[in-house]
Length: 296
Image 1 (cartoon, rainbow, N blue to C red):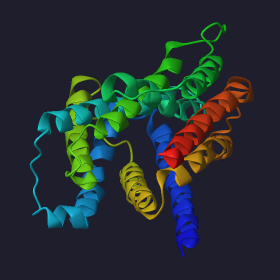
Image 2: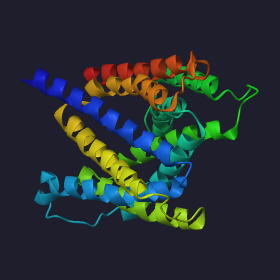
Image 3: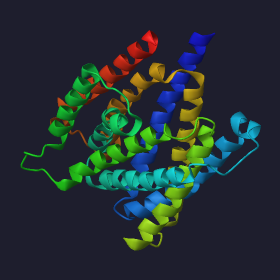
Image 4: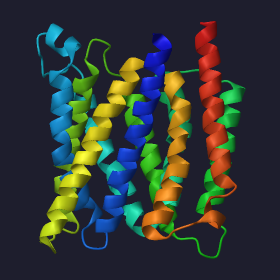
């Protein structure tokens, strides 16, 4: 039954959110001992394994003759470079801000995606979606608090990450339709792994392991992130994106609970009511895009 597949896809979506948050918790736990760039490098190197698995399991890739080359290879490389900085900004912010605050601000990527689609894809965005973007960004400003006494530039890091993640998503739609999605993902993951290595060597370098257990944490970080990608791709293959997108915002309360349980963080004053405006803006965009799709 289609409804059953959609329900299962939603459960997969929620599981992927938990796994991504688990990866984030490990990154935050390791941040005092290791730099954001080296953690990103470890994550990307391990992430090549699920990226390769997804590509090998892709029917479209096998049907196309298992080609590795892309006509738009420069765009593929550029997306990997952007992804490198997206991850670096996000990992760095996890070590400097509360877990829930970083996660909540990162959800503004949906707002950036709408704004970027206008110059990059030539999309026409109506007043409803622009209003949604405006509502969401008011929420972002309220959380980052540029006028608060305790404001630091670190609050802009997850915002930069959200912008870069949105740019990666929008540019994916610029790739030729006949290129399998897993191949696009492999290009991004491969370049991001190389980029993270270069970034790590040019900034903090690679820190010797403080304890043997840290190697297990690093392996778990990569495994959780890689598994989350596999499950997320599976979910989007089982149901329409418009059916799944609203459930991504469950990641915000989940992140709040996890941050409270594992790091004793409860940033009520930072998050509310700004986080509600981010969610409202994102859901309004999803609702409007779904209405437009139905009309088409």
